[in-house]
Length: 402
Image (cartoon, rainbow, N blue to C red; front, side, top):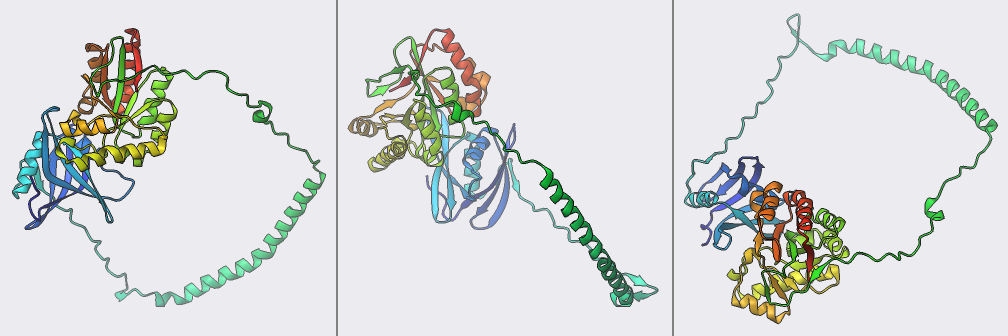
């Protein structure tokens, strides 16, 4: 499905609220108009996530969309442009959002849309000129008084300056005498670092439990073990997730998106330094089954390169966005000596965004032998300590995937 020729949707702002989101868009086509569009909160949250405040980008909504049957989810796109650079971002969206796009493509408005009306700008009303006994007020009539006031201030300043200088000299002499009489003391500074000389760390760093994957495609791992996997990073939550896992001596595997690697290189370095496995989740979270061989190669190999430049380790694990795969992609995984990691437990945390719901899903599932799918989000951060506690109570090893 291609965009309607000349029909452009510029996204100006997103006001995300708990129960809905309000988009301010400008549509340019046969005519130009600005529209306020009320959409569902979930789609609005995804849009808000994609819009960064670090650079003043221009955003355009696309009329293109796909339906991912595996996830039962619509996906559209958003173009982000800065100067001469542009990139396409993938947007998880609702069916009602797609209906709205179709209406806008036909030049129509739905019940959730209304024309944007600019607030009128009220200009200040000029005041009437001051009148004095029927004559217009002018400053010229007050010149004598102004000059008299200026003369008085000059004379007062000339009288004060000698007195102020005399006071400053007296005060300076007093301070000099006090300094001369005060005995000099040498300030002693404690240096705990110097006294506590660094000793070599002889304690062995705890090794994280791990499972070595053997199959080309993995949906599960051996009984008695469980793998916590985190998609769509790195992000502002990566280091916090790593810290929680490390504190609990729990394994974890991160599947990073190439575009996010360029934005959060320190988070990649942090996860790697703490001993966690980093895998590939494509460059921009595209449905790879819709791409040709060359495009698939780029999504896989370029993301590997970005990660390896930071970690100096070979990336061998790959997770396709949406779990979508075809023979062409599987053959590419074989040729690169990689392993494809899917899952058999999906918390759908991206959808519910609720820590209690995420935890309940894990508690209600058979966790032994599972690969649990999570995403980097505030809700997952909040749920993670409770998930780890529950899994440990079940005597399960929480492992890295290698």
